[in-house]
Image 1 (cartoon, one colour):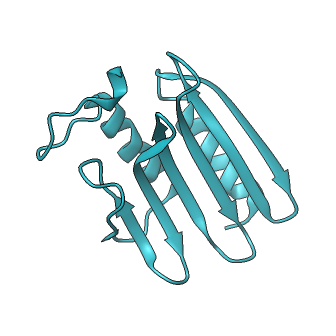
Image 2: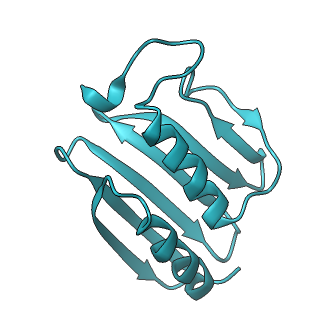
Length: 125
């Protein structure tokens, strides 16, 4: 995947999420770095990153300055998920397309940040 393909897949996928207020991103050489802000304040956003040269890809849902969920790919750990109930954990997953990652994000947002293991609702905080 190249930078253009990443952005071309990302923007339409993010536009399907009604909780996203705006999207800002920057490209510099082989790197895309940006945020999709959620309605309700600056403390809640999705951070995304892609490096064409290394293949590194990262999506992190941030609330209160902490990652509460994420999906990443890097050459060291491969594809992995940072689950809502334990975002510091690394759970190996199958390779994901950008639209598939955004669909997972949409499911997390639709749940209000709840998981089977936790009654915490970080989305409403």
